[in-house]
Amino acid sequence: MRDASLPPDGPPRRILRSETLLVLALSLGASAVSSLISFIGALTRPGALKEQAATLNGSYAPGRPWLDLAWQLFGIATALVPVALVAHLLLREGAGVRGLRAIGFDRTRPWPDLGRGALVAAGIGSAGLAFYLAVRAAGFNLTVVPESLPDVWWKYPVLILSAIQNSVVEEVIVVGYLLRRLDGLGWSATASLVASAVLRGSYHLYQGIGGFVGNVVMGVVFVWLYRRWGRVGPLVVAHALLDIVAFVGYGLLAGKVGWLPTP
Image (tube, rainbow, N blue to C red; front, side, top):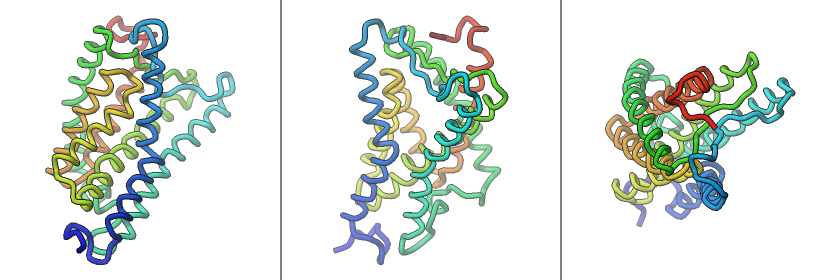
C-alpha cells in the first residue's frame, strides 16, 4: 500500500530513498564526509585547534588573477548543479505544486522573503559571532578564515557570489528538498529536524566542534522556520546575508581590529 504522503502517481518509496541518497552523495553528504576527514586531520596534527586555520575562500591560482577568476567562477557554477538536479526531480513529481516552487524558492513573495531573511540574519549573526569567538578561545575550534583571495578587482564580487551559492545549495537541499523527501518517506517531524540539523553541522565539522554545534543549532532554527513559513526563500536570504557579511567583513577588517582572530 502506498504512503498517503506521496503523490498518487509518484515514485515508490524505494525510489525516493535511493534518489535522496544520490542527491546527498553528490552534494552536502559528500561534504560531510570530507569535513569529518578534515577534522580528524586537524585533531591528529601537532598544535591546538585554534592555532590551525580553516580557509573558506582561497586562491586557486596564486599570482595568476585571470586564471584564478576562471577557477572561482567554475567552482561556483558547478556547486549549483545539485540544485538544478533537485529542481528537475521536483519538477517530475506527479501531483501538486512542482519544481523549486514546491519548497518556496521562487519570486512570488520577494519582499516578505527579504524582510524575514534580514531579521533572521540579524539575530543569528550576532549570536553566531559571539559563539565562535568563545569556542575558539576555549580551544574547540579552528581559526576560521572566511577569505584569503588576492587583492584584485573581482575579489568582493566573487565573495558575494560564493555567499549566494552557499546559501542556495544548503537551504534548497538540506532544508527544502530533504524535508520534503523525508516527509514522503514517512519520517516524523522530529526525526526529519534532527537529520537536517545534524547534516548541516556535519559538513561544517572541518571548522571544529564549535562549527558543528553552532550549525546544528542554526539547522534546528531553520527547520522550525521552514515548517512555520513553508518557504525556503527567507532562509536563502538569511544565509546569504550572513555569509556576505562574514566574507566581505573579514576582507575589510582582518588585521585591522584586535577582536577578529587571524592565523
